[in-house]
Length: 340
Image 1 (spheres, helix red, strand yellow):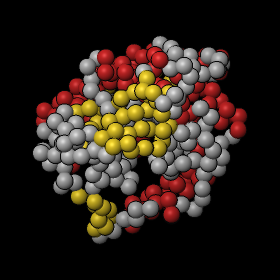
Image 2: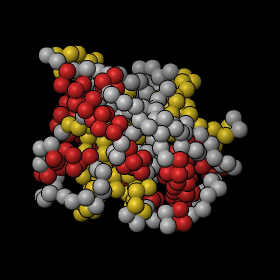
Image 3: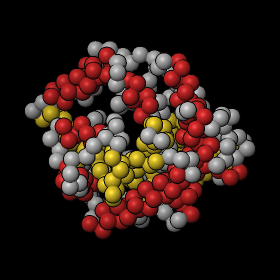
């Protein structure tokens, strides 16, 4: 079970053939890598499933390969245009997953990526890639700059300010399968994942198309596509394809007239709690001691969301899905009315 969706394996992937699986999107949510938070967001699973499927279908239309196979409704495989009601089940092709082995070296966790060689195929690339069109309040970029990252390390020629829109998108990359994922340089990412120069170039080209498509799609709902995360896998012929899910309110950070319309709403709420302070300290302590389970060091657990905020988040998710996909599967008023 994942923190927000469950994977059902129908056929396991092999060295030479992709498997088949189903994502069952739940109403659970996670912030700051905690895992399942105390209370679910009503209809969130169906919203993410619908938005992700819609974006996958638009990518496939543009010739971009993904692992998406369709949605499940009434026991049948369907496209979003065939939906009669919301669904929370998506069928996908599966690739192999090879988590790097962790070792405690002098009190620090070190990871062995030696399995990722040029002759390996049909696997999840162990990286998470983030495109950034803007730097809204809450972006991790500002914490990293405070910690010593230089603007030029991000491809910027100045120190950015919260809310700034970028002239050209920047691409960040982090590890994906470590206990605590970390940002790395593109050169380090290439070495860890065993990627060639051509493969890095191809992945970046696909990212541009994904970013453009999500930006265009989100604009229909009046949303600004601030940033988003994308994951890739290699098929059995070592051709890159988009995996996991893209274009949702969990994968992307959208704003509407300057207001957050994404998981960032709950992130900002929890940043004002004592649990957030305890969580930050626990991560620091775990990092300094080479401890895998940082949650065991946390002195508190997250409180429940304010019930009015929880209801508002659910409404925001449903309205955004309606207006972004133009399918209007959810019984809710407009995003403009909800955020008025």
